Image (cartoon, rainbow, N blue to C red; front, side, top):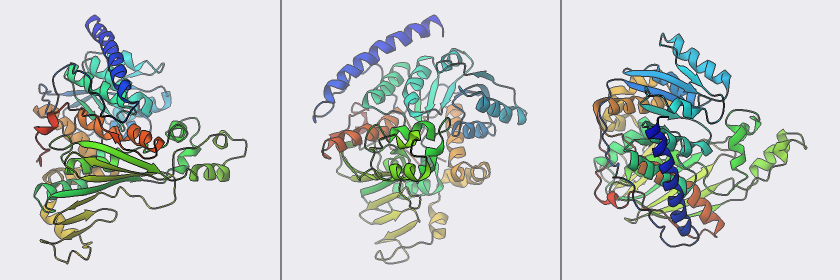
Length: 456
């Protein structure tokens, strides 16, 4: 890291400390959180100079990150410059993927937990993909922006309100992108519903429902490495919504959150925490470390968010109980409703059936409302895979925007607000479900920011 970047890094650490002190003063009561003084201009609609070639570095190439490496090998206008991970075997695997595609061998890093900073000191990287355990997301994203690079960070982007403000303040001060990689916003169904909403099919929006319901107890058997080796322990720390953004991201875009509306407050409650202890007792020896843990995160967490415009959003989290996968993906308006898992629609005006009966046949709806982006890139996205193509389409879109001087579809304010459900739900659960206010991470610019358009 050069002298200039080192000075900026030290200055940012002092600013972060001041931010934490301000936000901390507000976290001990139920009043509206104090807003730290801005350290730079807003980055809503941020447009950065066009990049003819986007040079990429990766931090974390395990279960999630290696998929990103594969996708970037198929993107035009991209050079993979460096790969960092503290596990040599996954570094070697990622390098082999790149080389087997006939691309130049990237430099590698990972001698220690902090070796990623050596990678960030390079001057031939434009963006950094961060796919690491949650506790590293904010520190690595902050360091990435301070080194003069754009940060693309996995979900959740932050696990505390203080971290969310660190991301916002650093992005504004450095004028760098900080995008949370919420891939579900690029699913075919979610894009179609966004198009339906923008065309007014559901009338005025009233209510949404989002979820991450995905039985993941089997990850508890990942002891030394992989996601379960660290994710399991989050169930022993606090009780709330540990993973809010997959369902919430698309619903937030339907409702123009941070672009005409914003989250106001949240109330959250959890069921008893029984499933993981029972699973550990059944699957592990009595003296195994998994049976020594105190699992406190409720098996099902349910939160209700109220927006400034008065809309409501239910957000659920359950990775423990035996049930089918769902993200809900429900949006209700004055003219009708769409719900996912399975997809179905009911309209008062404009549907082929009475609104008293669900229409499960999506073929005609795809024909009329399929998002232009999916019409253009859907076949290629499905060929390249990644959760049905949404991963590939997300990365394709990011590179397209950076090469064409367009703002990214998600910004740091989205990352902060969507991730804030994590700590605020925990605060609410711990306080008999009393409501907790969301900070206004945009500092008021949500009132005039343009809605996310239907891009082609």
